[in-house]
Image 1 (cartoon, rainbow, N blue to C red):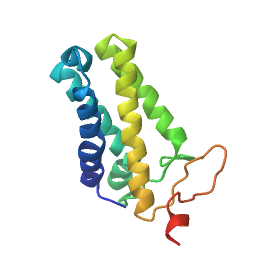
Image 2 (image 1 turned 180 degrees about the vertical axis):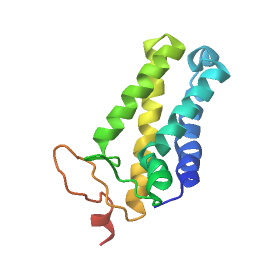
Image 3 (image 1 turned 90 degrees about the horizontal axis):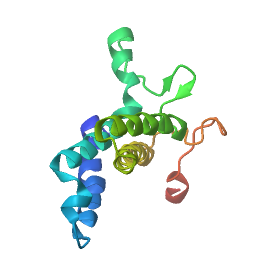
Length: 149
């Protein structure tokens, strides 16, 4: 499992930077579409938090129980797309409260979701067992393992 800073750096340099460059290279009114520096910081924060969100239970397990187990919140695995949908909705609502526009709020939610999925992919590449399809398939599997064996 990559360290938390690895998840954030992967999102910042591989996902966020690519998204901003694609948006910046589009012609006509780029500043108006991007929404200024504050909006870019909001997108960066949403994706950065999304890339750390699956490991949030490690914080309270560390302080309450003295271990770093972080794969479930109750019966729900944190490394699943179901848990990611929960974070997408949180980011969508926070984006709407901050920006007051649904298109910008959707962008915030999508950046958070992409950060979350980048976390799952990095953990999967590092050999972690990911519960991608949790409510429908409750066994962990690896997307990349079948290609490497």
